[in-house]
Amino acid sequence: MQRRRDERVTAKTAKPQTGPSGEPVLLSGGNPQIAKGYGDAPVQAYIEAMPGWKSDLGRRLDAAVVRAVPAVRKAVKWNSPFYAAAGDEGWFLSFHCFAKYVKVAFFRGAALSPLPPGQSKQKDVRYLDIHEDDTLDEALFVSWVEQASRLPGEKM
Image 1 (tube, rainbow, N blue to C red):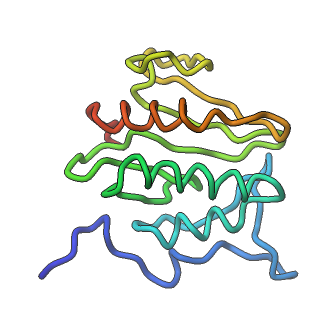
Image 2 (cartoon, rainbow, N blue to C red; image 1 turned 90 degrees about the horizontal axis):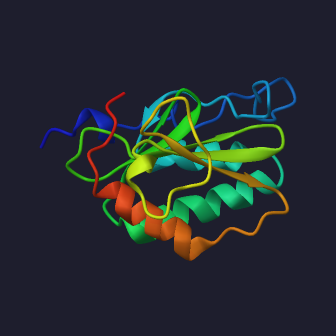
């Protein structure tokens, strides 16, 4: 049985880039530098490399997505985790570390109800910025994930 391109994971893609101290390399703004890869392993490597409180948040976000969309496909692209519904060639969600917050991107967020609060220059995209002291409304987040997973994904 041939595996789909997006299901392949190698040891290289499942590990964060590390510096001389063995710590994950963080790009400007504190985002982990992770090689492109498909599957759960590179996403978990990214989450593990997220600095400080962001790693716990990353685990919560990932777990909420998996609960809402059990057959979700995962990848790391452009140093960020991406999520897609099974059978869809496009992506519905991604998140990215910044210095003081984690930005969740809903690629078809303008179609979600209620709208995620962050606007974008792209008409379909909406954001949720989560800061360290914010309380994540997991029920609302899961609702957005469920809605987003039923929409056509963004091909990237």
